[in-house]
Image (cartoon, rainbow, N blue to C red; front, side):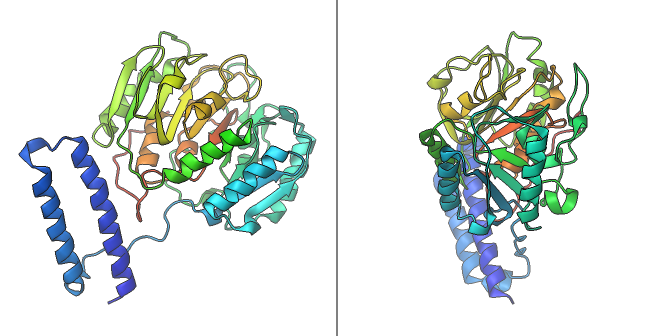
Length: 392
């Protein structure tokens, strides 16, 4: 018998019982079972498991080895000409224990919203030459520049610049091969490195974002997913899939479909998906660590100069991840996160960057911002969650 494997399996059992207890607590102990009786039952199970470890070693399943993105597999890109980028990168490496070899330094003037194609291609060539094959994803450490021509900068670093990920007018764009994928190693499997920007306009905001992501790990928050249906019919196209999300995921997490232009005074926001140009009353809500929030509108991804609401406002309000488009995408829902797919992958224990990137079918024009390694629903193994029906 391998005692190390057995020890890990017992830890998994503890983690899963902790998750189950939270589920029972949220369901208010339906069926007449009291908290005392349930906790006593769990205690007995644990005692029997530990004392009889040799007898049960046959059915304790070994834990898969890290079935999610880890700090070792994330490279951090820093712009040495941007003092804020340097400060963010240094703090992030320390907080996430990212190996120093995973820090890739570049230089370019920071005070602009767009990198030229020539500049970007030179940067990417230098970065790619320094990346070991085990690196599966990238974290940028700036809010601007946020685009490369017609592509967002996170999409450009993920796929390389490719005009088929762009569109002139209201057209479809190239599909994301990582969309709703079960891949745990996107570069190994698909030759793409999903990229997210740890974006902020000052260090205090960046530090708060990173701290939220780190503190969210393994908390299994008991919050609510708010699927908001506004009176903006053009931007509210995702409301058509809300019923599907409720059908497949309401037994895994509390979901509320709300018909309003804004949430106000909510203290348990874990997911907030809406469609409107400006989201009011953000400051009145409490976002739980690890929360995902975004609004479907044309230019939320213009992080520093949007005529609409910048996606950075979500992070400043307390969300840990958000998304927005950097050029006019038209209101194709495929160009924005699918709420059900994002929730599905997040709830089963994947990191923010994995779950969010897997939720956008056509991501070429959209920028992902947040703390990439946030993983509030983590355990030592991937959790079983019912998948939504095939989308898009």
